[in-house]
Structures are given as C-alpha cells and as structure tokens.
Image 1 (cartoon, helix red, strand yellow):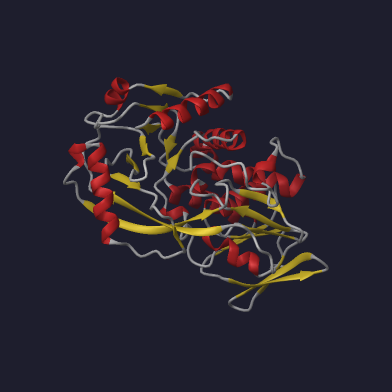
Image 2 (cartoon, rainbow, N blue to C red):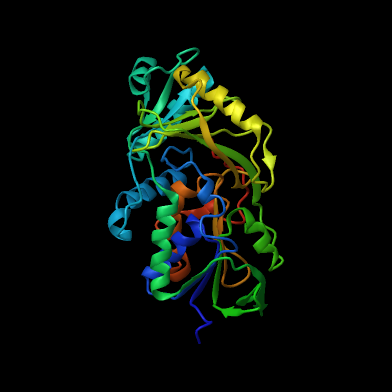
Length: 376
C-alpha cells in the first residue's frame, strides 16, 4: 500500500530529516510530515554554529562525531552546505568562568578535542579590536564550525524522497494506538498513513505531538530572538560567546561578512512567539558593540525569533517510550543543528538495531535530570 511506511517521522527540521536520512540509507521507507515547510521551526531560525565544547561526555562525543559528519556532508549529500571551520571562542570575564572553562577543557582534551584556554593577547590576535575590559581569557576550539541549515535539511530530505515521501504543510491530527503500540497517523487532510514506528522530532511542538498519545514529556519551548547585519569586511572567524548575564554570541558569516547572533534573555521567555522586538535589536547592538567597539553603527538588516526546545537539565531526549514504536528525539536546548547529524544517526541505529556505541543514559526519557549541561 502506498500509504504504508516502515517509519513515520514527525518534524521537518534538522533532527527529523537527519533521522529520516539515516533510516532511508538503511533501506527503510520513511514518510516525513512537517506541519509547515522544512526548517520552519528551530532549525531555520538558528545562527548556524557547530561546536563541540560541552560539559558532559556524551554531548562532547556526540558533537565531535557530528562535526565529522558535517565535514563529509558535501560528498554524502552531493551538494554544498557552506561548511566552514572558523572555531568557537568562549570568553571569561571573571575567575569563576575561567575556572569552569579550564576544568571542562581538561575533560574535553581527554576526549581528544582540540581545545585550549588562551590568554588575552592571543584573543586580541584572533579578534582584532575586541574589548579587553575585564577579559581574563577564553576557551578556544579552532575546529568548531558553521554551516547552512537550509542546505543541510534540503540534502537530508532528498535522501528520504528516494525511498519514501516528504509531506510539507501537513499537520498530524491524531495518532492511533492499538494494544499499546503505534499503528497509524491521521493528517489534517483526513488521510491515514500506517507505520510500526513513529518518531516524534517536532522541535518546539514535540510536547504537542506527544499529547496526541496522552504522553507527558519534560520538553518546553523557550523563545529566543536573533539578527543578521549588513555585509562588512571580514576581520574575525569564530563564534564569540559571552556568557555574562547581559552577554551575547555572534560570528561573522563565512564568505559574506554579515554578523549573525543572538542572546539568551534573562529571565527566560517561555513559548513559541516568533514576533520580533525593537528591544532586542537595540540591546543586541549594544552588547555586540561593547565586545567589539568597531561594530557600533553597523546596520541590522533582519531580525527574527524562534524557540529552543528545553529540558530541565539542558540535555536532549533520545529514547523510546512505553508505547511500543513511539520514539522521542528532541529537547535539543538550542543545540539541535550542531548535534543533529549524529543524533539522527544514533536514533536510526536505536530504532533499527537497538544498539548504540554510546551509553545513552544522559539522554534517557526517564532520567532524573540532575546532571546539568553547563555550556548551554
């Protein structure tokens, strides 16, 4: 039957398409459903960074393997994804932050990550014109990178279409369960599609989809804003991260020179509102110019908002549920794009072979959520 698949994936962002891509590469027929257009959720609203600097061993390993996949993606997907390794630089403006980075670097280096703590003079060479007021140093990983999320998702979707189908602008209205296992989904067009496995990778809407099977999951949407500037001459290469309460993070787009960035609002703003605010544009400009004074007066040409999918401990959930065949792959906490390739590969192997090279307890659905990700 043409309405029957091996796996149904709900969500057309990096997590859903990566999972579908690796399932399709295993020869499975995948149907992917997206209620809007591909990348309409968190993926198309991210600032394109790819880093490996995390505080838990599982996230570090997942990130390192994900980067390897980004490096070969041009060949794997047979199209350019604008991958560029410009690095990440986490700034330390107080002793507590400096000590935190140094302690984490010790863990990261044991896992063979090319990261080091560097001083102010080296930072000035990497970022000409950066303000050194209160700056003590920073954690620098030169192999961290950036890529184009739209091109990545497009490439993954092409793989899915070879054996299955991608349904955009198609909302899942109901999920049918029989004897505690998934059977089918019904769309807003009243069309029914069958599969023994359903992957909930719906990003900020992942909780809404879980509620269709009366399942409560600890993932909540959190609103964030971002912006991009006019093109200017390139003068730095890495993502700069200022984790002060009134800090921000941004980099200069490879090949174009525009600055793209955002900051985490304090207090956090729950919800999925995608409206832009003047306050963000003004405040983001101030924070960027404080770090690099020569950016004062640069024009912001576009701003937008999107949602992180947050868990209580800042780590994703990649796990099956008590409903046979129903999987949760999400709660990426703002790290979906950078971790997406390896998360998709892990999920595909979990689903098809029930095996994984990692101890996935840190990402389990029923964990205690006490092990916090420090570098959120």
